[in-house]
Length: 180
Image: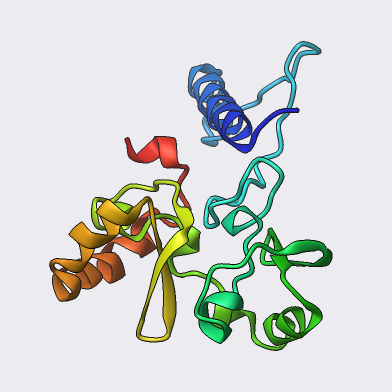
């Protein structure tokens, strides 16, 4: 099974190659270009959603329940019985009550920064995170790569959150590999 990272690389490579083909095509005076698609060119969908940090099966937060952070103050693994799709991602929940809470107000429970490591956003990067390492700041759940990274982030909470707010809009639609 192709994982999400491989698919993202494939989409980026396809986009680059198509741009290259168009730039080398004979452009007419109208500024347009004709590109013929040969039988050996496979068109890859470019509908990959880079805003969310999804695992290889399309689950946000590696299948952890986004409601549990706020309602229970703990990271709880969701179960297949209580599942939903929202905003291009699959979400799992520990129980029906949490699924219902999420359905009623998903924006209240989804992790900040698409579920990427919050300290990575400070660095203009998208890093994976450990869904069991988190903090709540101004009603938003922030996830971190590990405990050491979280502690480093919290050494300058105000300054780092200022950078997160500034950096996230510029990177949220980009693939992690584009930011290296």
